[in-house]
Image 1 (cartoon, rainbow, N blue to C red):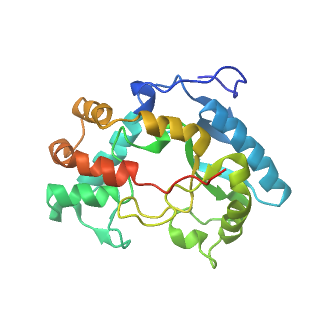
Image 2: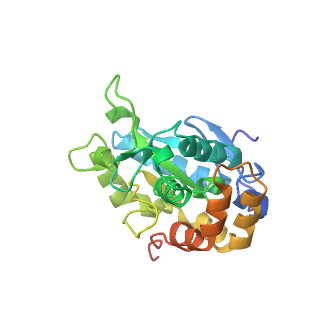
Image 3: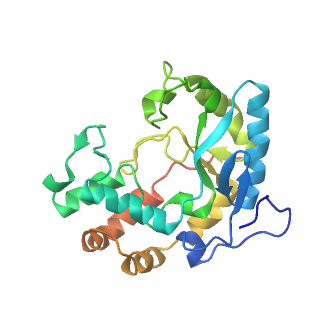
Length: 239
């Protein structure tokens, strides 16, 4: 994988790139350590430099995530090896849920493999490393970005400045699909192409070929999942 964002031609999104089964569309950065689409990497580094001038150490908690990693996250939640939370933040017991209910619970906080915007290299989860108290573990919960939370200043800074670098929050409000994620940023000039190209058939094929726990239940619900959890995001800001 390349180690710096090139200034060359635009990288296209094919089925493998859209579903996280290719690395051809992303580059690895050393500082801060993350993996992003080249155009997004350049925009993020500019935004990070601007935040740094205001005393904010803007770093990614998560950036590009490949298909295999998303499968592992899904399977561990399905098996009860990772915390499984309801939309209200309440802990659920995976074994006590029907397959359909388990699918809905996982989808509240995790995308199906093949459908994560992190596959595109256009989206990342961010926090202010300077505001994280020593010994405190990053949780990535809405309370951390609320007015009384440690990342309240970061959240306000993003509201004021992120749009000029092409970023916005695709999960700002609850649309009945993915729960609000104030830490999740998307580079909309790049993500809109990936979003336009990701079709239900592409997603179905990727899931059918995977070793996904609960695959039958997910495939049965996939048209609704695609509409509610993949397509239903906040629109990007108008120019």
